[in-house]
Image (cartoon, rainbow, N blue to C red; front, side, top):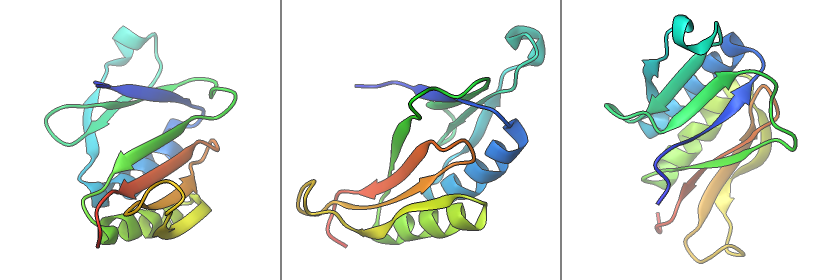
Length: 128
């Protein structure tokens, strides 16, 4: 089981604006900011469902190739809300909300590209 993961971001302000909005429908928010004195001056943000951060962003040069990360949603409506919020926050559509039966029956997901081009997904594995 994965405990936490993360990615590098080039513009902390743009990424925070995007992720704050995109992940809010899933119950995620910044739950930890690592002090600059510890990070060598880089912005490091830990997102999660309070109280535990499990998705980390670190200021730096984004990975090549870009990262794909998927967040579990509790319903199709949450997936839809994620997609709408992500686009409104400057994300680029990379696959609108809908069923993806080629993955498995009941797979419902949406994909957006974040400000650095990382492929961010919200997915629900239940019917409806």
